[in-house]
Length: 334
Image 1 (cartoon, rainbow, N blue to C red):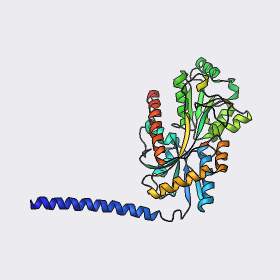
Image 2 (cartoon, one colour):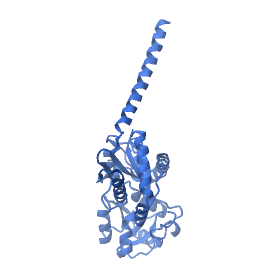
Image 3 (cartoon, rainbow, N blue to C red):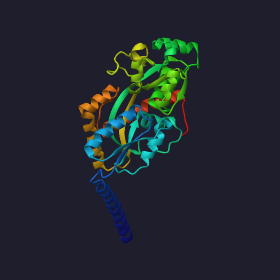
Image 4 (tube, rainbow, N blue to C red):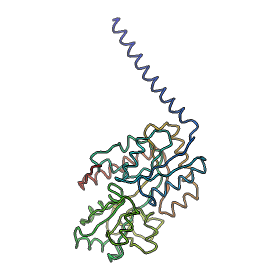
């Protein structure tokens, strides 16, 4: 009995020590976040400059810099469908000074697409807020001579594996838009991945690739100038930024939906008070009329929300694109 009593006391002591240790660690994290920010904050963008995530990061940085009074640095780290930049953030200190523009590719697609990853796309991050979404758009080289989706499908079926479609990287929603298009139309077209729009759009204009799935916000200036031909957006409804462009769904592909969305993420184990502060700052920035108007003019629809809403979205999108990837048989090694 005496030994049993001593064992119980030892277990109780051990549990108390663990609880105290966890509480002390939490208190230390909270204390270290007091007075934030005391130095520059960097926002990592996982694609080249000029695209939708880069636009978002720079608009957010400009707004925050005015509010916080510290430098907000935007750092572009492209490669492997966003995995290079995401890995950097996942392995950073959870102190609020290194943040990530999360994408549907990083958090809902790559986990199913890549055989191995150096980070977990969900567990290694703290969700802050949804930022904005933009339709993807199917644009073609003007010399291709097609004016709508039906003409493109006819051309592709008459020339299997001769036409190519570009995207800003393997595993991005732009790549998945192409895979979904192939699945729903039965065409055979080859995927050509790029690191970003800075490389893909010039190749589209020159004719090195036949077509491109791109963020509407990135391609809109070229569409309006007549340098490329837009065939359709990938959302179920037309975009207010370009209402003249029909959806692919209304042209005979009912249910076709592939939206590029962007979020703000931090490394895992970010102190709750910092998560709340960053969420508030994001909501305030995206609610300002000048910020909203700038984003809407670029084809981006801002819609900040709670961390819980962002988590639910990621889970839903991961299920959706996981099924598409499984059916396509696509698998990659990083």
